[in-house]
Length: 81
Image (cartoon, rainbow, N blue to C red; front, side, top):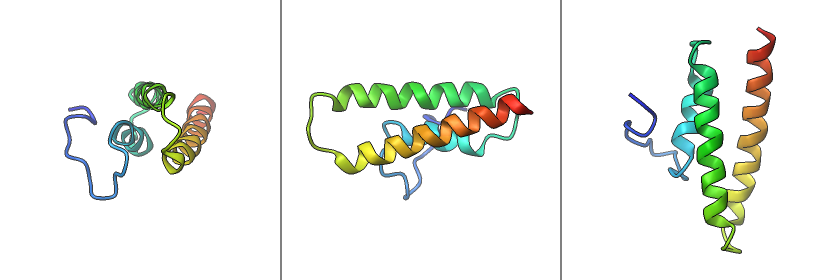
C-alpha cells in the first residue's frame, strides 16, 4: 500500500503532497525510507510546479519549505546510519 492508497487524516491540509511526506516521516524500514523520501520530494516538487503560476498559497509554500528541510535532515540521518 502506498501513501496515496490510504485515506488522508484530518490533519492533512495539503493532500497533493502531504500524504507522501507523512509516510516518509513515519517509515521505520531503512530499506524503504529512501524510496519514501524520494516520493515525498517528487510530490512536493510537482505541487510547487502547480503553484508556480499562482501568487496565492503563501501558507502552503511556507509549509512546503519546512517539509523540504525536514526531508533533507531525514535523508542525512539515514545516510549516517
